[in-house]
Image (tube, rainbow, N blue to C red; front, side):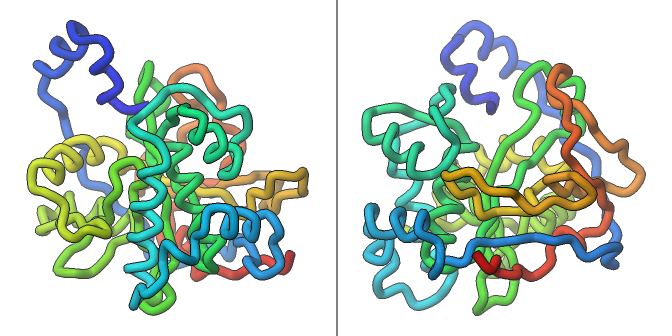
Length: 287
């Protein structure tokens, strides 16, 4: 899903790496909420699936002694990144966290999508509302490959905000110690602010920070997330809005994409240009 997978094809990668990467232009959004959308997050106490995940993988031990929600999130992020070694292209047999982890235990490797899924589910299992967020290029409709990347966002109650974390790269972006959500991250980069990156071990090494910035900037154009983040393994009826399952944040003046990488239709989206709509404080589901 990312350009680094081309390392498997040395000649092609060398040819592409000789080309200069063009950054997307600056983007802007409305800041006033246009509508109240029905986002739903799992009730950890009443969710048997999340209880199984928490107990089987001893997640309470992962965050034991943590002094803040940020520290808890970074510890879970680090734990998630270590569940399999490196990036793989294959899809799990099912897309839920327990299936992904069971198959990773058997040696399978997965994509950014699965890192985000496991990270988000583990945080939810610990009572921290979390969601997967798709990041898409401006060229998402015409790109042959590499049109998107997936991360997680977690609600830090003690900071009263959503913050973005990248499970595949095991880092959180910050500016002057302030953790950022995905849109704030984009704004900070386009404004040339001093963005740093942290993990559970502390500041990320400068070389990795540079590589990550070069990778991620191209994906920070469209942002999307599901209305219903319970994602239970058993069948259930997800919350929708006007028959759609996801909200996509679109920059002012930009087209509303309806196709992913030329072939796959994206027909499950409500579109908004309001960053306030995208970042409502979480309401926990009743089931």
